[in-house]
Length: 290
View (tube, rainbow, N blue to C red):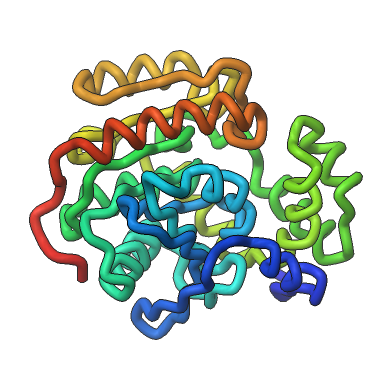
C-alpha cells in the first residue's frame, strides 16, 4: 500500500477540546496512545472501528463518563499509535497491555465494528478478567458468508482523499447523517490511519468468522446492532441469538452500521443500559492481564 500516515497541526489541536488525558502504553515494541476520561467508575476500554481513531469516539466517551471510566484506544496503525502487524490477535495483545499498564481492574470491553471483533477475541482468550463485553455491530462477514459490505477499494479511496486534503463537506456527501463535528473530525483525522493496517483488517473481515469466536465470549455479553445495518443483518442477528441464547442481542432502530453516528441519542441510551447491566454482572476470564 502507498501513502504515509499524516496528521495536521489543526488535527492535533482538536485534542485540546477533548476532556480526557492522553495515556501512553507499550505493547511489545509498540507505543500505543489512548484517551482516558478518568473518574472512579468501572473502567471501559473502548475499541473503535477500522478507520476511526480514538478522537472519533470522543462524543461517545464523554457522554458515558460518571458511572464508567472510558479509555478509548488509538488502535495500532491509527491516530497517534505506532504501526505494527495488524492481526486480530495482535490487537488483542494491545488491549491486554492497556489493561495491565493502566492497572484497570476487570474492565468492560466495548468495541464498534472492528473494535467489536477485537473485544470478542480478547474476551474469548480468557487472559484478561473482565466484567463483560459490549459488541456494537461486529462484522459478520467471513468464509462462506459473503464479503464485507464496504470494499477495500472504497476504504483506500477515502484514505487517498484524506491525504490529499478532504473537507467536512466532502465527508458529508458519504455520511450525511453524522453530526457536523464528527464530519469535521473525520476530515482531519482519517489520514492518520495506515493503509496497510486497514487492508490487513479488511482481509480479516473476510477470512475470519465472527461466529467461530462468538460462542466462546464469556458471559455477560451484549450485542448491539443497527436495525438497518448491512453488516449485522436480521439473519445475522438471529444466528447470534441461536448461538448465544444467554446473550442480550439488541437492535437500535433507525441505525445503520455506524450506530453511534447515525442515531446518537438512541445508541447512547442503549449503551448506557447495556453498561449498567454489565457492570453489575459477574467477572469473566481466568488470568491476570498480561
